[in-house]
Length: 340
Image 1 (spheres, rainbow, N blue to C red):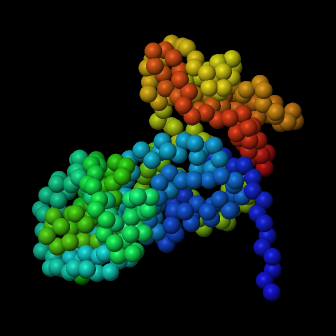
Image 2: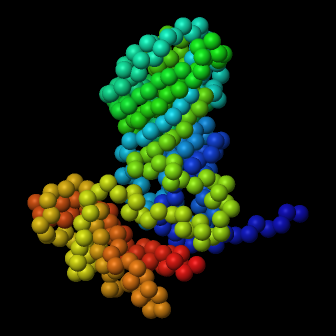
Image 3: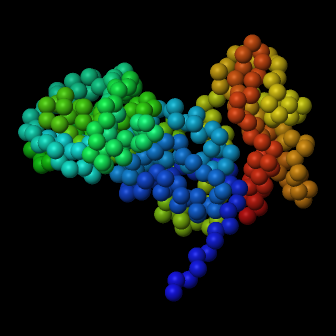
């Protein structure tokens, strides 16, 4: 008879964990694993990585989930390996081989392909993707053997480097790709299109995300390392919620304006027009903070992240805001880390 499962006591957790996603896990599987390790109530991510891909995966907890959409717009950098001469049903090593061709490629051909696929390009999304058609993911159609018409989309390849991964005489013949791309760019499709331009076809055998927005691998933690930490050490790995808006212009408010901004009211000031601002202010006076640590937290955090907005004609307009409960919980979380 199986022993009863222990129920995990969830708790409010706020912040961003930069995970170096391991090979073989889907983004959601990785998210659920970290969520369980943190005992977090609410979690999400800023865009998926395929199970065969590894690398930077920002995971958002609590209030950070409010701002995760902003990070979906970020440019991303990948390193990949593509095998030439073989096309597969999925565009990667998981699929069935559907075509094989001879490889007759020289160094100058790679240079021409890199130039051809740098800049603004048209790309047809792959069938094995999470894009939706009539409320159903394309990969569901693909698994059922149904080919759905897709409209080409414009994406931007800001930088692309292509080089051989070894001597041309080595079998299989593979190339290494390093690409910095806009949102919505499929590296599998890019590799397949490059293979067609080279006249031999190709499919991905390795994919690693090196950066997304301002986040890079150097700041990531592996799942194995995270599992080995104690509970408070895991919390200490989280970046603050405002890490997701590091590229926003900072606006600081006084106590009176901060309280009104948090309630959704517009504020007037001498700020220049700005499309995206991150707003900070003092700890609101109406928070129900335990007196034994309120003084300690207040001394350490004289200003808090309150939310995002924009400035038009000298008016600060709220967009996404933290609520008082979230601010209380963030202060308590920070206090528990600093005293552990």
